[in-house]
Length: 489
Image (cartoon, rainbow, N blue to C red; front, side, top):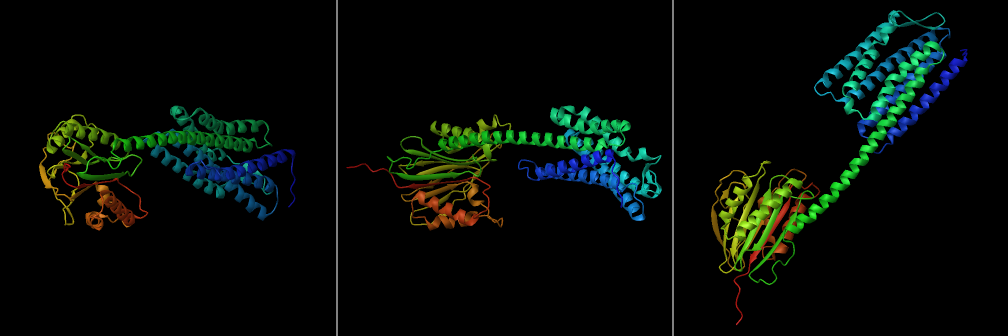
C-alpha cells in the first residue's frame, strides 16, 4: 500500500499518538490507585480503553482512506463502523456518570432505561447504515463521504448531551465545583472542536479535545476521591480515638479491681466483660449495700456499640441507686423500669438479674427481668441451672411487676451469672455453645476460685468458637459464699 501523509494528517497522527499515550498512562494510574473505589477504577479503565479504540480506529481510517482494493475497502468499512460504534458507548458512559452524581431519585431508573434504549437504537441504526450508506459511504478510491442522513448518526449523542446539560443545571448542588467544571469541559470541548474544524477541516481537533477533556475529568474525580478518602481517614481516626476513650471509661465504670473487698472474708467474687465491639451493652456490678448485704447485678442491653453503652450507664446507675436506698430486688427492678419507661424514645430495653446476698445468713434474695438463668452450686453438689421466674425486660412496658425468690447460699456455695453472649456464642458451623456446654465447663472447675472458674468457661467458649467472629458481648460473674464473719476470741 502507498500511504501519502499530508501536513494535516501528520498533525492528526501526532494528536492520536499523544492521545493513546495519555489514555494508556491513565489506565495504568487508574489500576494502581490505592484509594479509588472499585467501581471508579473499573469505570475509567473501560472509559480510557474506549477512547484508545476510538482514536486508533480513526487513525486506521485516515491511513486506509484513498487506498484501492477490496481488502482496503473491507478494512476501512470495519474500522469506521467500530469508530462510530465506540463513540456511542463513550457518550453513554459519560451520561451514566452525570446521572450517578446527579442522583435524581425515582427518575434515575427511567433516565438510565432511556439511555440504554438510545444506545441500542444507535447500534441498530449504525448496523443498518453499513448496508444502506445512510450515514456515510466510500467511493471507488475508498475516500470517506458523508451521506444525507449523517446528522442522524449523532442523534443519540445529541440527545444525551441535552440530558447531561439538563442534569448538570437541575442538580448543580450535588456536583462539586471541580467535578462540574470537568464535566462541562468534556461536554463543551468536543463541540468547540467541531466548530473549529469547520474552518480547519484537515486537523481532527475533536480527538485532542476529547482526550484532554477525559484526562482532566479523570484527574478531577481522582482528586475528589482522594480528598474524600483523607477526610474519611481523619474521621475514622477521630472515632477510633473516641471509641478507645469510651472503652476505657466504660471499663472504669465497672468494678475491675480484684480482690474487690480484700477486708471481707465472707465471700469471694470475680467478674469479667469482653465486648463484641469497642464498647458493649452488657454490664455487671456488685456493691455493699450496708455492712451485711452484698448487691449483685448482671444485665444485657439491647443492641451494641455506643448507644447500648450509654443506655447501660443509665441502667447501671439507676439499679445501684435504688438498691442503696434500701429497696428490695423486686422494688429495685420496678423503680428502674418506671424511670426508664418515662423517657425511652429509642425503645431500648435491658434484661437484669439483681440479687442481694445476706452475708450473715447466706440468704440470697433475687428478682429476674428477662435475664438468663443463674447457675448455682451447693456445697458437695454440682453446678445446676436455677430456672427462676422471669419478669418482663426493663424498659419494655411501664408498670411491669417482678417477683422475688430466695436461694440458700450455705458456706462453700457458688453462683454463676452471665449474659446470653456465653450460651449463644457461635462457631463457624453456626452452632451455639449452649447452656449444657456452659454447665459442663463450670463443673470442670467447680471446686476452684471464682476467677479460675471464669477462666475455664472463657477458654471453653474460645475453644468452641475458634476463629468465628464474636457477635455478642461476653460477660460473666461468679460469687462464692465463704460463710458469716467469725469474731476473733
